[in-house]
Length: 260
Ligand SMILES: [Zn+2]
Image 1 (cartoon, rainbow, N blue to C red):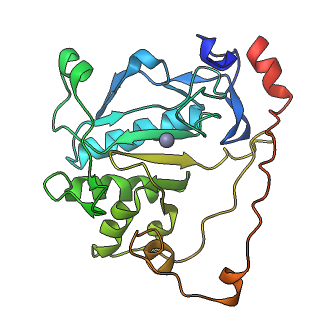
Image 2 (cartoon, helix red, strand yellow):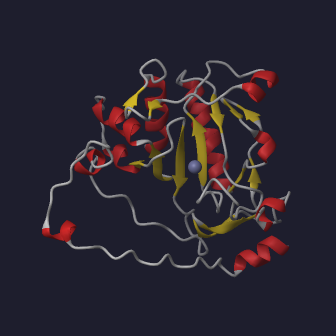
């Protein structure tokens, strides 16, 4: 069943404000990303998920412009958030505050025709079953685009399939600091997910602890592999009682955003 957020067609008035957490919140004063611009196009725009915090819209436009200047290609931007953010009935858990965006890893050289934009399919970078990169689809352009995004101070985290993270870890980089922000997560093999920090001075946006220090290319990454054998310790032998999932209560301000 559709959530009330999925029924709203327009953003609320006023300046952009992200309220609550990435996976439990909403967006006031959502700004629309133009469907086409310097170095990018919005894909699957019929879903109407091209609204974001103004900081996200500026970030994306700058990233795409830079990627055009670096001849990476014409970037295809997927879902950001709904006009007032909020929950989806299926699909994304986060993308609720206008500070998360999905970017396709299929990067055409030129802007697509309106027809091609409608029919183009996503291109997988990972052979998920065999847990390996698809060499004919992956190139340095994807790596460059992820590096460019991760190196931006506004970016908190980037989610990619663990095999993509592995691929990035293998490459030689002058600076590897940005790799700490690139976090392995299943799914994310035909797109990557960019998450921004809360905008400076925001009192309504809930931040997340920064990712662990280091490039994240060691044991933690290896533990995602289906072939990984965890060392047996006294800790892992102890039976772990599953904790009940806490019920998510939406920040009260979001009720106002929805009704305004
Ligand atoms: Zn996403």
